[in-house]
Amino acid sequence: MYNSSSAHTRFSPAPDLQKKVLVLAYYFPPMGLSGVQRTLKFTKYMRRYFWEPTVITTGPVGYYAIDQSLQEEAEREEIRIVRTSGGDVNAMLAAKGEFKQRTMPAEFLRKMLSRVSNWLFVPDNKRSWARQAYKTAAKLLEEEKYDLIFVSAPPFSAMQAAARLKKKFGIPLVVDYRDLWVGNQFMSFPTPLHSHLHERMEYAVLREANKIIVTNRRMKERMLLHHPFLQHDDITIISQGYDPADFLVPPVQRTNWKFRIGYAGIFYDFITPKYFLKAFQMIVKERPDIAADMELHFIGLLRKENMRLVKKMGLEEYVQNHGYLDHKDSVAMISSCDALWMMVGNARSADTVSSGKLYEYFGSQKPLLVSVPDGALKQAAQKYGASIITEPDNVHQIKLALVQLYQDFKARSPMKPHIEYVEQHRRDYLTEQLTKEFNFALDNP
Image (tube, rainbow, N blue to C red; front, side, top):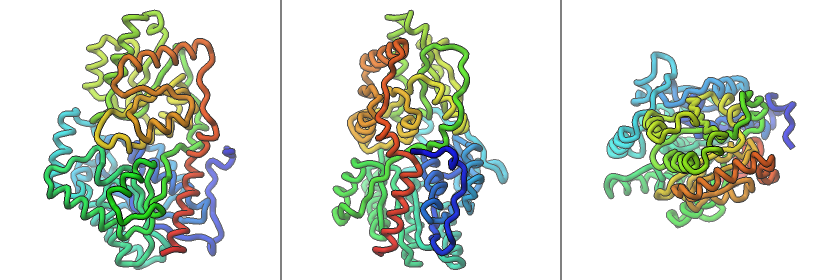
């Protein structure tokens, strides 16, 4: 079981046992959101398993979520961070020498900018940063001895930089896929030429990799199908997770005991609050007595078009929009909720998505309403045990699930998760799995 007394203790192994890993990660504190947390938590716990990380990441940029609590965590753990900039658009949007929080544009504009980016930048718009990261990493590798290179993507240009480093210095390379590259649910290829270039680039990276990490079985199956030269043992599954230390923060104090259901994160593309709000609107019309005893809490980036939808549906009195919160405050809000909701819509490759949000919800041990298509997320929610699972756009199913969660709350008999399954997704345990793969890569070059 987790020992809270060691939550903030820096582990320092004997120097002769310690190995060094060079980590390439564009997304790292003080940036926020779930992609940042995976790499941060890995590097936080690596020393416990005799690996000393050095993280090469971006310098000041403009980003949708700036999270000082995550930055403080990295500093508290004394993670060595080397920052480099590449003159990309995000860097130009930053204040001079500082990370700057940007407003997320309206969805139609975000999609348009994404299409333009996919046309102009292959593999992605972080290429200039990846070039700078390569130069910085090469200088470090010439000056210091490192045993292994680890890279987490997207952005996939970071994987290219890591593969070049492996080729030049002959150091084992472990690549971590948070999302697929070819077949990514958020990426579209404007032309057959774009598709060909991405496939060729990914092939070149995978040929250099000593080990490939993915977050779920569906991703592994898709990659084995798409890249026949890969063997089953080339790819290891290390899921998303939660950090027990985060949940030592006390819940936000409540002013009432209405049923509170929360959502943490952002909405974009095929991740939308529309069907959830429609379901709740049905409850307002059909069971106003129940609706009056419920609150909908949104923790994250609820954009103007989402708030307009709330107003159009006449749900303002039920919705509490907390805006973006630092991670520690977000966890405190999650812990104060009686149930949590998440959704991923129907889209190409949605079955391979492993939302970090769901696994952080696992750490709360709350009852969940999970609106997802068939795939990795649905399977994880089923194994969690305290989930009501609906189709992502089935308003009737979502309405019935909300009523059921409310009734369980009033009866003081909420669903309980399978604790053994929850424990499997602790960040310290997942980092132990990762460092075993590091050791295997060293022993089997």
